[in-house]
Image (cartoon, rainbow, N blue to C red; front, side, top):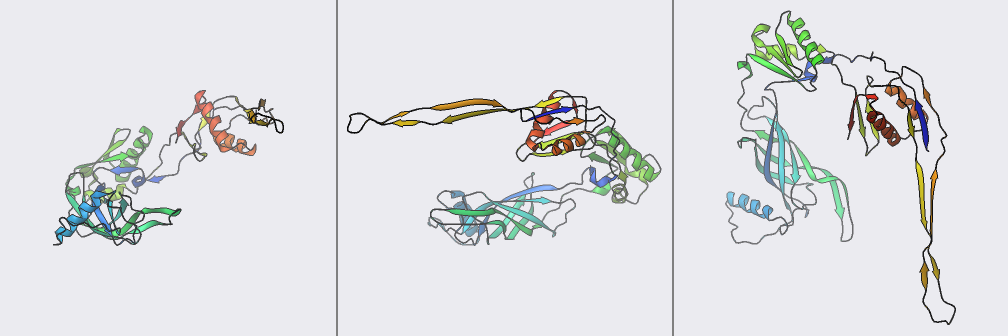
Length: 365
């Protein structure tokens, strides 16, 4: 066995409390949200790194449409430039954006273009889920990488087929939402929890010195705007969002098996448990031998297979004892001192969870 670990642990109540957090970092206000936009456009001015129009006929279609809109008749013409690329343009329309304001857009190639570096996005309408046009994008693409190559090899850094246009879209239509007309506003917790919702309710009522907030479930607090006696809904939310609340966190262990990353909170506890981790070493070696006939003799060379196989069990060389009243974080620190690799730690934690001794949510990514 590579490692034998004996863990003698006793559950203790969590005594570490979370630091107070602003309410704006814990909840979302009902109606105060962004809207996703998407559009289909064309990037021009590429240095021979655009779409191959034989493999991306939709690029030729949109190019013909744009040229005809500009008064250039290309019907029946054969043109196959390599300096254009069809792209999808995405953006997020922030809440309360007004006509004329500018937002960032992301441009991504959808054909076989090799790079968008140095290209210019032609005027592209951006639609929301309702099909209406809310913004128009245009500008120079800042690509996120570089690609170069020849006939036999190619090298690239980053993602040259995707880029950003800062302030590349101008808002043309506003979202029809009147915040001032709301008589109540719901606060939605990003991580629903009854304890945290109750603390938010109490903190808001203390701030206004009257009952203005009511917890309706583990993820929602309803705020009565009229009872706050403020000038407007915006003034009420301005006072609410800066209230400090101590959130209640769930005990959680998150592991990433690909990178061997382990993240856990201080409130994770495990019961008394013993864990033994070991391994077998399986060795298989192929050493074929070529047998040849004698000189000037009739015969053929024959390859005789020869296999050496063996199984070896590694002896236990490490024994660690953890005293009572130890948190999981201290257990991991002890395993680190023994030289246990992150992937071995993940196996140990999974085994403890399967035994029902790990009192936390175990998330594997």
